[in-house]
Length: 312
Image (cartoon, rainbow, N blue to C red):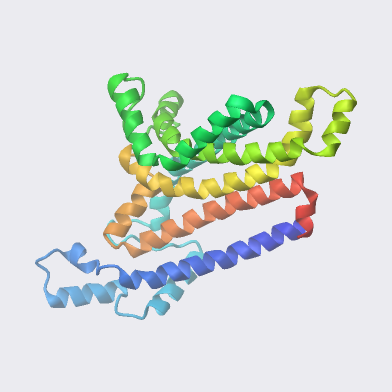
């Protein structure tokens, strides 16, 4: 387990370095932010002075190495537009996006696994219904689902708020209500993907010879499913869950815009539009760290469920 953990951490560090380097190199393609900072009335001398102040007159590799040196010490720089530390701004938005992504992932994992197991065990109409729902989940865009949820549950029924986010510390009940629609919109497609994978994995395990032996010993069906079938089918389902988590973070950018939730997604979109390079790099670092952390946790869970993974 220690060897697996050390390999994963080393690979994560290399991947983080590569992604931030590529992102920094791509910043040469973004529009010059000095015009947005100074306005249309700025003179050429003022624009040149601002570019020197921001370091835009230096080679991109030199700027990246300087930023990397600060990032290693925990300093992600200062926003060019707000003047606030990047780390401070991201930490203020981070709980919102993490709440959305983690809860949506848990919903996808629990519901997807339950539906997949039921379809694999019952077969018949339930299995066919799952295949239809899975196809719809893949085909229907999350943006359309989000708009439909707002129209039905917020505008017509008035059960849930259409926009906004309430911090958990302010009101746990309102926090939960503000997350229901965004979580459902993000998780709708992921539930179908996890269910389809869980169904295939469970069906493969049900056909194994050792299960027939366990049934012959008179073990209850629920014990077979929960202790033997689910454990052996879990690695495949967990792999899909980790992949879906990456998609959920990407979908959060659109969903946060629709529901007016000020998380990392909306921060990334706004920073990209106005070429706030320090903020973009900070969001990339935090996003990659979140994904790598989730993948590491999934790898450890899979290695615990399947000891053969530790030797790979």
